[in-house]
Length: 148
Image 1: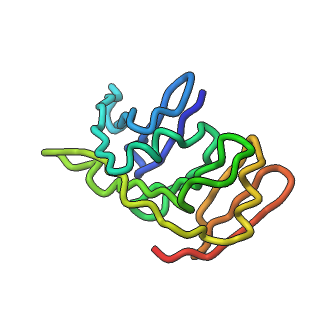
Image 2 (image 1 turned 180 degrees about the vertical axis):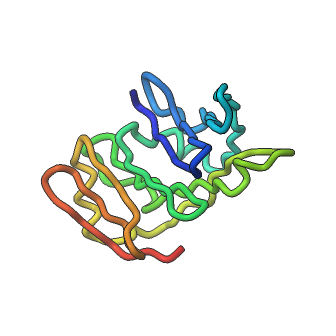
């Protein structure tokens, strides 16, 4: 239930998380290029364990090039304590010798002040547009530009 599915290409799908909660270090690669599909666990290298462990399961994310971007949501009504953007490097997930994913240093600033409003929504979607992130929570659409 609470997971992210990340399409890498026509033959590979990455699953981040699990049934009861998103475990930000539980990643599996599903390869669908033969009659028998295969699963492979992908190690996750984390540099920011204390911040990552506090991400909520409702934090929306999307793939941009070889990165997976997560906009952390505040787990309560307390003031925002997270950096503006968490980034997963997926560029080594399909390596044959040593596949892995890695959390990069978080972006310290919010992508846009208007995205501060997103922390109150229970369910939301984040997609990459043409040079922008588009956030939709069922009541509003917000966008902000980003640089790869």
